[in-house]
Length: 167
Image (tube, one colour):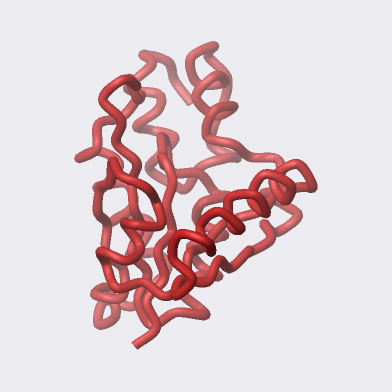
């Protein structure tokens, strides 16, 4: 069984995340989505809320009889160690542009040195979602902007409720 680890903050889940996750499910038998949890950071959504959001997204990507192909976990250690802990042989990294590539190439090299048995796979974001980042979506939501074009259905409503603004 080919297992892939797709790490990130997913705060909130965006259409960009959905795009990469969809492609990851196309190349792996199972995808473990690993939500980074760091005590020094204050995310907009709790770990539990992000798990719920990812479960919602999973139901749009997979038929009911295949939902077990998607697992959501937390991690606070090295991403590469999380991959090994969950039996992943692939580490999924989404790329939006050349800046992402430069950074991700460095990380892939470091991870390869630490755990050569785990292969980093770069998945380019589709053109229509390349510009989306969770950071920008949070900023737009906090400033009263419309987020529905950047996040899956249901997530925009959560953002509106969290910020006290209508979407």
